[in-house]
Image (cartoon, rainbow, N blue to C red):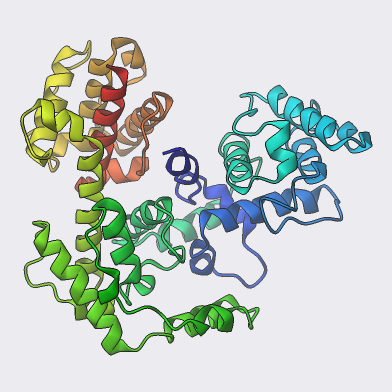
Length: 415
């Protein structure tokens, strides 16, 4: 859950200033293929370079455990309050304490996840969490220009939003290798089958699964060109074996009551966008219902349906101090204003929403500001949010489902 919450925010839609991290000759598409961990390393090194520091970080373990790179990073993020004085401390544990003390001076403070002991030990998971939290609160990247903003918006074509949300979700489950190019990486079926096994434990008989050739990984390491390496990996499994895997994924979906009418494994292997998105959405939807299993049991249901979620949202809205708006489905046009979502948040706790900040939602700008407010409040109460304001104002119903599901989960934890 911590991994989801931290890495899920490292996205160019949430932080358009990430555009600053593109390297010479690198396209936006190539940059967006990078896993969140690689983007964080890129961000870390960007600030080290601007600080005139001679070192680079290539991992979250050996390259950070002496505290030197952290010292320079924090000094670059907040030079007025974080000095480089820890570099003069020879004892590594004392230096680590000074580094963490510096992180606590930031506003908001970022002394989380790491202790001096775990920093010096080079714990990769805790260091990753520490850096992700630093980035989410203090990216310190220059704002983008109107031209750069237009390039990002042009790239965000239909289907790409969902694909990137699903990529974040798949990677949050630690599938191997990490998904970097959604439609291509799912073609051989192995990522899909890993997702099945994590969402529905024990569902996959791995003896029936074709694995990529063992030499694919070693071949990848022989080239420094990421695109060339990517092609080597993709050529590791023949089409016939890939289709066997994706057929198995479709079969598992049908066994678990997914709606897969007309979908064949070859559609996934051929990169059919709509069908691939449809299958992964149903896996993510099942993952959401799994997190709400206790609520389902209290409702006397096997799992939470969309209509149950709508009913819950309407009931919660009635408890609030706002408009008490009601929706008929996740395709209700009023959702584009984000007001129904704010009413749900108000129902969870009336103090969450200051209605003086809520606009009528008559213009695109008003809708956007409302959506931004709803997402901000949801994150503050600990909900794991995958969407951005445009997903709400554009009425992307699947992603709005994830929003309500996260609120239901957060509400359960508040009981």
